[in-house]
Length: 247
Ligand SMILES: Nc1ncnc2c1ncn2[C@@H]1O[C@H](COP(=O)(O)OP(=O)(O)OP(=O)(O)O)[C@@H](O)[C@H]1O
Image 1 (cartoon, protein in one colour):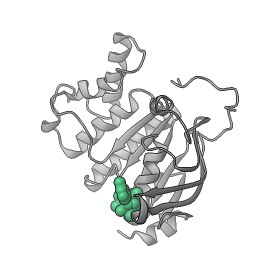
Image 2: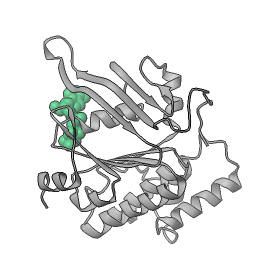
Image 3: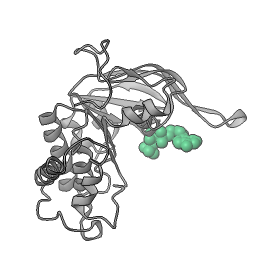
């Protein structure tokens, strides 16, 4: 269920994320540097999109713009039918409620248990305590952490921490999941496991996933692969992407 007010212009076939002529700069004056150039991209509901590209090509910048974590400077970016260009702080905050974030540095709170870390994501949602408890237990079971609910992050492996972060991102049943290098710190099996869990839960919940990765072991999980190069978006086939990022 969306946290944003319904808009009549939001037709069922409308892409979940749509951007046109998106540009982005960092810095001021003589230090001003353009890092995104005329990005045009549409991501459909339920699509799993993987974005690859060399370091510094603009992937994280694009992800943070899509995540409503940075203001749009130039061009258009709409999420679930809501334009983020010229959006107020309140509108940007509302947009974030429909997004689950999985970033590399888990951002788990070390003084909270696994259960409590996941519970935090429900604090801004209007669910009853009983409903919250059911959802937290279900999602932690789905990611294989049913016997770790009362552990603290410092007692978990890297893979378990990442699975906690996935549970936290999914528990609010967001319409969009943005993941930045979710397998970077994991060994081959744990990396594959966490992305498969993400994929399965996302397919069940019908949400859209955009995943930034250098990890070619998970490229086959994508419906579509896109590549950033020097701030430009380049469409590539999975084969091209693997050739570009050999194991
Ligand atoms: N806050 C910032 N201020 C100034 N320049 C920045 C800032 N963040 C990123 N950049 C620059 O913008 C460009 C794109 O960076 P970005 O982090 O989006 O790339 P990336 O493809 O995600 O790289 P990586 O794979 O290394 O994370 C780089 O040249 C980077 O140095």
